[in-house]
Length: 372
Image (cartoon, rainbow, N blue to C red; front, side):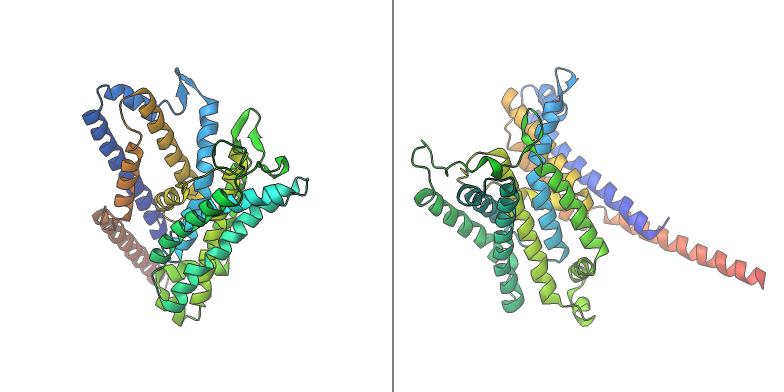
């Protein structure tokens, strides 16, 4: 078995162990705070897909719909983290992307079905440009992109709220929201009768394939990964480190903006978000679960979506608060980020691989000697 396969097996085992520990923590809290723990467990683990003992297709559609925006943000974080850029402005980019896409669908409608493509692209492009700010601050001033990107999130939120409240609000409504955007600007439903699952999910899967190809089959993707592994080595190898860092954050901004655009145009008739939606933060967890591998992002996103729905059902029908999902996500984040977690087992795999390689070389040398 090759060393790469051993490491892949290790990462899968490590991921399963982290999830297992997180679920164990959840079970402990459920048994402590619930008077009916077994019923709560049924709602958490079984009810998201099975209703009254039978498979619920509608529940599956809901979870796929809920996973759509965090696939986009997971991919965005995956690209930026692969370049060792801890840019956390994806949360604000989601809100800005949705807001700009909504305004485009309201005020720049062509009356054709090109509207949805134009609106999504404009919302995404604006966020891509926005990400140039923390990227340039990083490469020009060597300032922490984590700090600057966190600050940008709240700047975005209050700017959006200012224009939503004072410029673009529909005064005829009882609450603050924009005017309805054109029907041609809406992302159409993927399944008839399911307004939540839209073609945005298919777009998210297509983006997953594109990003995976970009990261593992192109020169730019290779540069991003090499800079993430060893920036000094990449620099002295002739790679344009500053350009690649900026590129990674532009791609992350574009994908985050697309998450907001697709979500708003697919799930709503108007823009009415009054706070950061949370998809950017969840995207960080998704990327960590997927170990920055784009192919695993949809699986990790569905897992998080499954947990969120399970805890929502559990909080609705039992006496366990839905905030329990935040505890699970925190524990998963903790164990995935802990480099020493299962490091002993990893060392054994490395030693076994080295011994196997030495044995193969010895056998090859003996064979060559016998032939002579």
